[in-house]
Image (tube, rainbow, N blue to C red):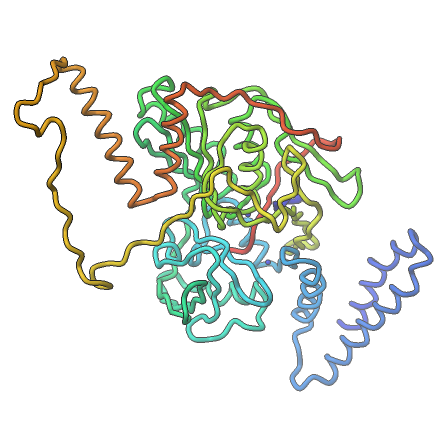
Length: 472
């Protein structure tokens, strides 16, 4: 049976079967603890039979058992849970890059559905859903008291169908509604662009396609920029990236590291600990790097940001990340269902656990709120286009520069103006591009510094998954 690492939900006969499969091995291993376990399992069987016999309506036995299992798992932490046949199938589909819904990653916080991040170019992102939003109602129906899986089910529906979600957002005095149409969510895992001479790599999730797509997009962008010698540096944009496959986070980190630890995981016992190290080869060839993160950057995104930050391979810019530092393993329990169980914590190369703390950026840069539109405020007076410089003075001396030099100056001026214009579109990205330009101006080249030593752990890791939350 294949396990996924997630690092980003017949009465008497059934009771006897559970006792045989669960309590029996425990009895063989720890005889002294067997009696209390048998008593609790008997209690569960008695309650189950009482519900079947006396509940006002005949319950669905299978649904009761699954709900009991899910309740046991969700009582442990927000990321453990039972995956029914439908949920397990959805999870496997999501890791392959296409699924239906709104395009939103959610978790549960104190019984409320909280947005981890909207996925790029999806109905949720286009409608204005933001990380940190709380979803209180779907089509006027309250989500309070529902499990996370039940809430996600309410957000799903036929492709093209309309849905209205009610949002509670920090800074807003009242809840408000956002309407959108459900759609097939096809993840564009990596997109590239060239800003000036900086290559920007936008990674939206970590699924089976991420590393291969990153490699192809990087090569294409470097070629567009005129070759690696003309590239000032790379921006790795991980904002609103809720996580995904652990092996893909390791591969992306390794792409920019020549040596050293990438991440380690530590489980309940020392023999469950693992460590992954980088292999020789830096796709960026030592060019400076900036990693962009925000509150929607979680799990696998934090592994990448933490690794590059600890090795001083990249400057982390933006806002504090989400802070999910636990690893989940998806374990099949029947042919079509599984459990998602938290099995380890992960640590950055310097030994940091970011659980509930997040990755702190090296340079804190908040994304400004969009300016009010003309409909929201009186149209401001236009600024005067009058300017005054040496060239405007009557009789000013000229400057005998060649046509080639003048063209070069004009190109550089255009690049500066383009970056300035980018601030209105994406202030954090413009800041990252400016940081790379400054590093290039002083001829900076990355010299990777070994991160602080961590306690020795052993083991070779296989790829898996490190998810932040559920997708709706």
